[in-house]
Image 1 (cartoon, rainbow, N blue to C red):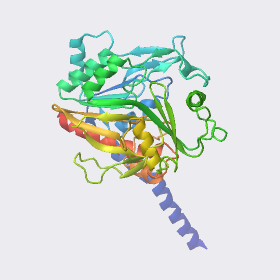
Image 2: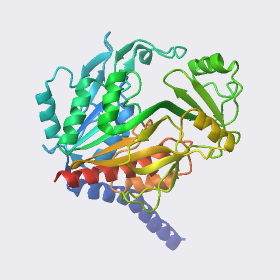
Image 3: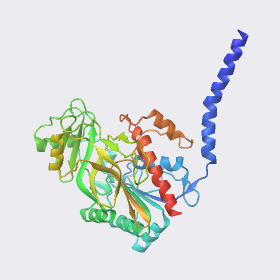
Length: 389
């Protein structure tokens, strides 16, 4: 009995060592890993609260990989960006951006950064600060691309910088003239369509479908007769179409596909489900497609896509050389992640999370982050740092 008790204590000691030792070792490796200087300018105009959800995933990755400013300071999600800074005052918050700066000043700013990242430019509206979900659009407080943003993109392109833009960089409330200039600078044309997946389109079983979306559909199609998993396509002109699983398309969830052997050299999972907002864009020929969306439309669905002016496949992530630099466009709300990621200060943590959040599980948005966005932006930043040395 005494020997058995000693054996039990020995095993318990090993368990304690395992439970405490591995995290300590992981933290120690992270702590003593040298930081990587890379000056990054992040623009996020869609910040209605202190969660910083639209750029949360990007900053977690920056901190985990120990990217720092040239001063050696780490990046902080609550202050190291341009855009909207919310507060609890009557004006809802304050904007800090490039407006009012001269072209020479913007050119100098572009000189100072190796990577420029447009996380979201949609903006904030009065409805973001209320519980009223009935209204589609409320009064804009701040948002949309402006001329200063386009000047920054032009200078970044001329100076050989790396530039990344995400979904909604050019849609409403950006003025059409500004959008057209953005499209010309980026070599991307928005079709006017955005889309989102819903687990259930039956409004009796899914109360999370926005009321304005239902009303808009009923105006054009008389009744909302959709059910089961499906996609809702919405055009900037107000047109709205519903695609039902099996009847119109066969991949239940839109899939982000990446070729295993590719020219651009990105190492990503071949298939990852993506159950969130995306926009449908057309790209110039000099772009390389890193990944594309595949919904596998039926014959009827393919005919509907063509009538809407849309192709069989939609670009998901693309890249092209722009002088000495590069331009990326992510046609999805990729850096927008809610929930708790855990501390970024542990070496190897993404490997653990990828094991827990398998790529095929779309029910938790973090699965997409760990299996696709994190490895994608990790490789983008690695290439950017190499190009700026």
